[in-house]
Image (cartoon, rainbow, N blue to C red; front, side, top):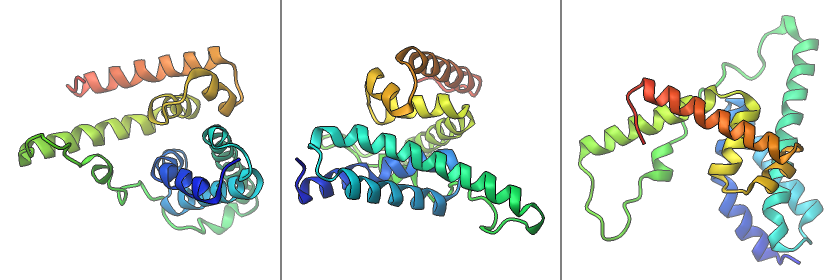
Length: 189
């Protein structure tokens, strides 16, 4: 059974990754923040009494469902208000999210990178981020859960509501597509 502090620590540990995952899907910072906040509230409200070990899986499933709910609401809103334009303004491309903030720390004992290395790294990260956004939704979801959230195949399958074979297929196709796209840009990892 998770204590209040354990639940709080868990939510702090997943907030940036959850935001980034939601942002990849909805491509709007405000909407992504709303989805993550809604997911966290639902986890705390409905599953806060579950063991700490179950929280990551429950949260991933809730985040997926909240994202799908957002798309359903958008579809309904767009069907009803097609002639009234966009209520939320132009789509945010996520450029306000500083990917380097997450990846910029220099591990202890390593030399500080040159400005050229930092710019090169920033360009590579931007290219990777762009290519991840270009993946089909299910491939992107499977890829992010497996390699960003470090979930195993069974956990990813349960969170996505599909078979383990589907997860493997989505991940394989995502990795192949990313590899081809990055290779075409001259980026090798």
